[in-house]
Image 1 (cartoon, rainbow, N blue to C red):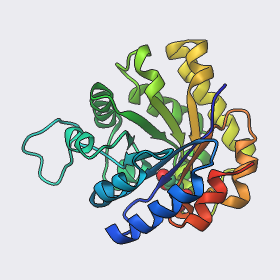
Image 2: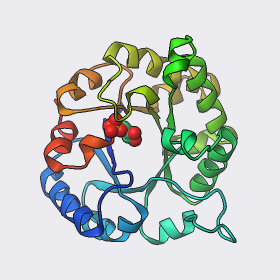
Image 3: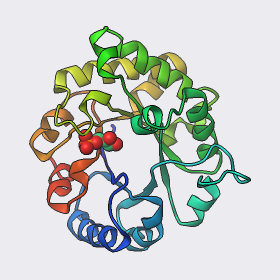
Image 4: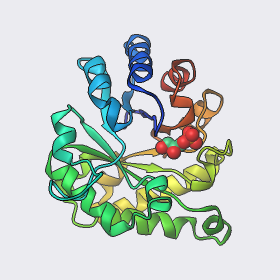
Length: 249
Ligand code: 13P
């Protein structure tokens, strides 16, 4: 039975003191929460937030990592440096990385394998642009991003992978995919994982939905058979809006 996994991606928001305040509120308010929880602050707040969530039921996540362990990569942050800060999970292939910073599937796959090699969990984000959806290509785009993102990932490591379906047109726009539309893509991604790793793996993999998740729509989304959690952006920036999502149902 898959447990729900609710993650907050804080993106490029919050100073350390603001991040600390939110982290403290979440630790207090989610301590009786039943699901798996993650917060992913900016790199600059990882150490601060890590000290606050340590020993709680909230995991510490980073929003990206470099494709190399170390070396001359100005401006990048290595998986070794993240581990050193207590990071347990890294979000990879977010649409903002793919589309603003032009990360391609090969680069993302390199990061996925490196994060797994160093014992981290990964949230691999996939999702189509509006024009791809309108051209009937949502499934094929998500399939390609899933297959390429997981290339070379051993079956034994799949338990440390979560997939987040984030239709790009629903991110930060207030437009949520309907639960029915999202479930169709989640089911399709599950089928793709099944083709790659077998039926058990398909049954067990957690697939989060991301894109304008709010307390008002969380329960309807989670009620769908193939939606196992949420990767939340805007509504993750305040305890008042994140906690009701994290405690939906
Ligand atoms: P919003 O919840 O703000 O749409 O962001 C979703 C997202 O990109 C989470 O990674």
